[in-house]
Image (tube, rainbow, N blue to C red; front, side, top):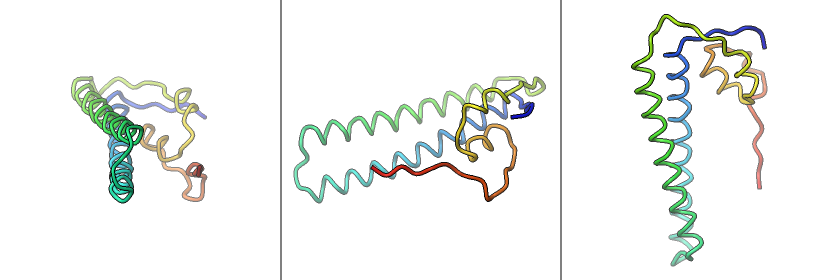
Length: 116
């Protein structure tokens, strides 16, 4: 990837946006798990443990999102950072866009869905 510069507030804003998306997705999975447990009768101890882990996941993402938002409020806006190298570690165009403000061709691969 070519040279890409972004400011710290933009980076933290992108991080906050991505964590908000992760939190939303995790809440949807949480609801689906709850429905499955309710339909199946009394959940097993293993199912309850998975449900608790999902709740901890959601709370952790929410905490990190709030942390990123607060950091973004405190950093100076004028300093730009070279993020091209870090962007190379990302696979999803939507995540790259969130951090770099680069709009890619809509026909590009937006990641692969893996079904288990």
